Length: 79
Image 1 (tube, one colour):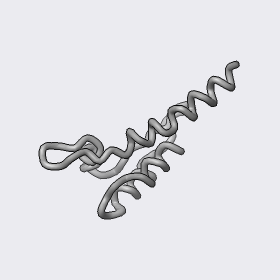
Image 2 (cartoon, helix red, strand yellow):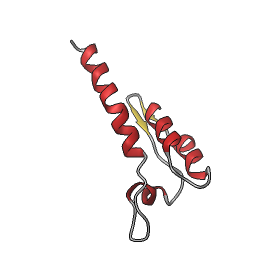
Image 3 (tube, helix red, strand yellow):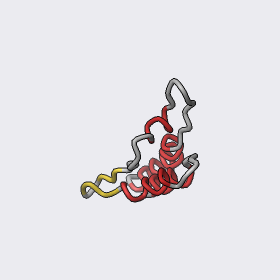
Image 4 (cartoon, helix red, strand yellow):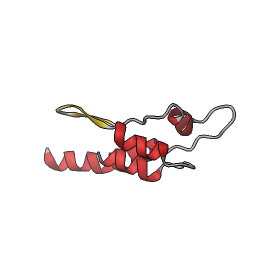
């Protein structure tokens, strides 16, 4: 949930459709799996870019931000 919230907060868009779809489409899919996704068909092109526009990554940045915190929490948990 934290990654999806960070992703939505940092997404670079002209309208709120992309940002709002991130939180509404993201959900728990099992006891240990949370799926963060968007509900627009252009989200992948925002993240990766294409021949006509540069990438504006936001999911990658959110994952990297939370990765260190996640790893630190687990290393403390399993000392």
